Image (cartoon, rainbow, N blue to C red; front, top):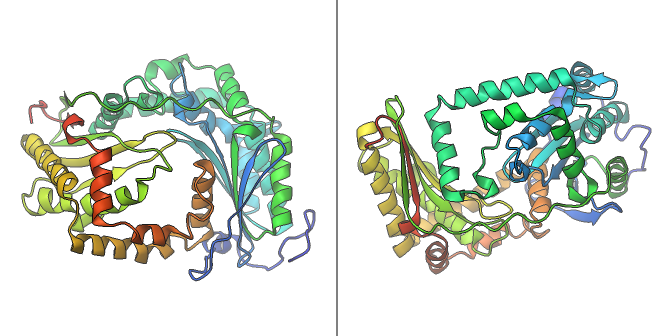
Length: 445
């Protein structure tokens, strides 16, 4: 173990910052040592040491996605976007310069059920300390400058006008409205023109004060750190955040009561078609059979059942796909494709029939064998860098998955058999109660 030096250099190897930040290899043969603890104020920390290169990656994840917008759609997205626009005496230019001077990278965003803020920096203390100080300022004490607020709000309104001219965006919003209704997941992530126009800086401050708190925070850490150094970094973040507490659990997603078809006219050459329903939450025991099964159904590109039936056999679409997107509560199951206006109804019916047959029959033995081989063979490449490990640490921490999730992944995939896939799809999907969205032409199919 190297000595703990928080005011000196963690590592002194002289390499170009850009090269180091682009390369952070993870030995494929090594186990992933995930360590977990909770700070005094409630920050849940997930740490994996990776001393191969002098790089530190960290991500703060909060239950502060658009599902927490409440009566103000768009406030979560606006808050996350504005974080690095100012803090104390630092404006957005000063923040960018401070990070650029030390070769650090910052990212922040809000999604459906979470918001996240990330930092990547060299571990040389002369470089890391300015980056870390800037990161914690942005995270814990944003100033939400008036001019930046107005600029970001105007940019959001422009984006909303552009979405209104995008058949893909129109179809996506209609799909979420149809499967989620009044549930928070049914609200557009960046809001509506009316809701964004109504937002004020005090609304953003109030959202930050409520949700950007220690008790609502997961910290993922990996890189050139010892456990003790990681603990000190976590405490420094913990000490700069109010204690707070996590919000109440999101409401349960209700299953669809009946099938629904939504046809939206749009002057386009192609129709965008989405079919689906609420799927599963993270941690659902059916996750692995659904994951493997969907790889066969629509998640494996040209070898998938949907691609074969919709494109190869009938030439109805250039591409077609399906996926489950687990969230804190049931995320969507979606089938998506684009096709000629006059083929939309036929393509949608072929896709539905393909899913119906798969739910009833499950995969063949050969399909299962190929899918298992593809997934397990490709998995080491998905944890081949510090950036990959950070993604999984954040995933495991935020959704409270088992610490051995990565270590047992291959075993869990190989344990899936045909019977488990049939049972999981039969339990989780109801082909007779799915929604169908068609956007394009006169929407008559």
